[in-house]
Amino acid sequence: MGKEYERMIAGKIYDASDSELVALRGKAHDLCREYNLLGEGDPKRRLILADLLGEDDVPYLQGPIQFDYGINAKFGKHSYANFNFVVLDVCPITVGDNVFMGPNVSLVTPMHPLLSEEREMFLNEKGVLTDEEYAKPIAIGSDCWFGSNVTVCGGVTIGSGSVIGAGSVVVRDIPSGVLAAGNPCRVIRKITAQDSIRLKKGLR
Image (cartoon, rainbow, N blue to C red; front, side, top):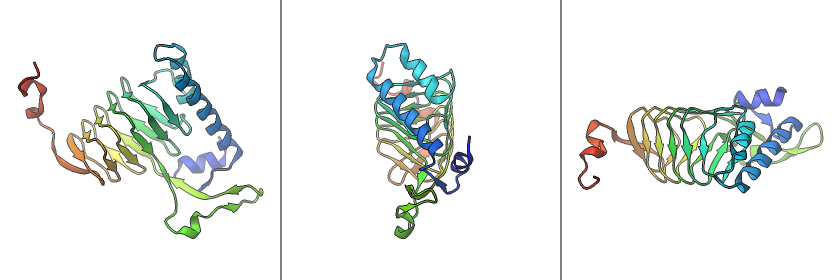
C-alpha cells in the first residue's frame, strides 16, 4: 500500500483523493452494491464478503451493507449485523467473536476538523479538489450486543460482554460487562447473573 493509505490507517491527516484510495473505495462500494442485490441464500454473498474483507472467515451480514474500504474491518467468529449496517473503516475496526448488532448500526472512524476554515475544500499539488481529514480506530470486544440505531464513533473501545442500548451514540470507551445507553452513551449498570432470561417469568 502507498503513503496515503499508511497515513490514513495510522490516524494521520491524509489525502482522500489519492488514486489508490479512490480505487480501493470504488472496489468496496461496488462489492457492497453487488452483495445488496443478491438474495439472502445466494452462496455468492459469502464470496463477495471474503473479497471485500480480505479474509475467508466472514460474519453473517443481513444486508444491505455499506463499507468504505472493507479491508480495514476485521470480524471474529459468529458475529452478526442486521439490516443497514454501515462501516466507515478509514481506520482499523476490530469486532470480536459472537457480537450481535441490530438494524441501522454504524461504525464510523472518520474525523473532520472543528474549525470551519480547516474543513474547506482545496486544490492539492496535483490540482485535484480535496480536503484534510483523519480517523480514529474502533475496537469492540467479544460477546457484545448492540440494539438498533447504535452509532459508534472513532476512537472508542467497547469491552467484552457489554450491551449498548438502542439509539445510543458511543463517543467514549465503555468497559466490559455493562449495560450502557444514551446520547452520549453512558454506563447504566453492571450486567449480573440476575439478568438471566431463565429468571424472568413468562418467558418459558
